[in-house]
Amino acid sequence: MKELKEIVDSIIKISAHSLAAIAELVVYRNEKKGALFLVKGKPDHCEYFLIKGICRSFLVNPEGEEITISFFREGSVLSPYVTRNNKGITNINFQALTDITLGEMDAGMFEELMISNMEVRIFGNRVLLKELQQKVEKEINLASLSAKERLHIFRKEYPGFENLVPHPAIATFLGITNVSLSRLRAAKA
Image (cartoon, rainbow, N blue to C red):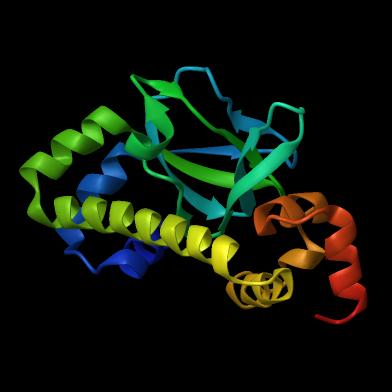
């Protein structure tokens, strides 16, 4: 419950009563490094907290290359159900980049809790707003910043990830090739 409280508090502080209501819905599970725990085209009906570890969301382009959309670190909320599903079918892949622990809860039950509990509703809306802000910021950075500038922002946002995450995943997240990332790293960008 301590880790769950820290995650919720990082979004908005809520009462112990509201936190307990969320915690009642959460079931924990572990996934090994490399596991695909959400697969595009497969059913999914949950919201997720990343309790421990690092994971990513990604898609496969028409050439068969994996393109990283987002990274998630320990102590975060994964992309909300409404942003990664269409009629209960996942529209994006999620992969554990280290061993991870997830807290998952049924999205329908969480939605019911949001309707009946104002604090939980505010929490859910803040998670959704944060997701939107991050996506827009990434789009703006891809369109307006150099690769070197994007790498600098990545390093500030995700310290230490270069030692933990496969470099091709970082390169596609930054919108560059793995060769370009290697050159930037060699030049101490």
